Image 1 (cartoon, one colour):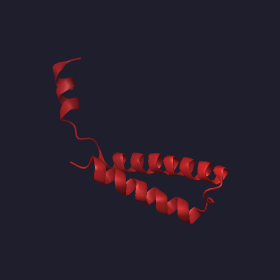
Image 2 (cartoon, rainbow, N blue to C red):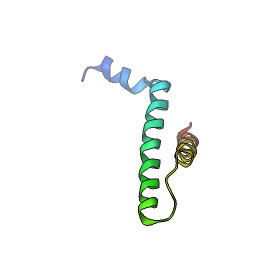
Image 3 (tube, helix red, strand yellow):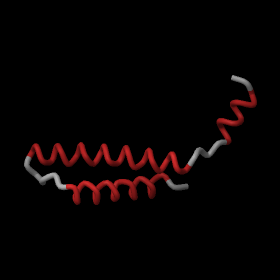
Image 4 (cartoon, rainbow, N blue to C red):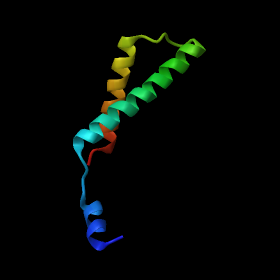
Length: 68
């Protein structure tokens, strides 16, 4: 790897919009999986409101954990 490319990769902070979209998608997938499994086991029922709320909670927790 050339020195310029390596320096560019190491100094890049990334695009915050991409990080936000990735956080939203991964949080939604995680929340969907947890709610679906909870419904299969009989703990809670899957509702759109519960899905949206828990996805936002997971996104917020992820943001709080990874912020610098």
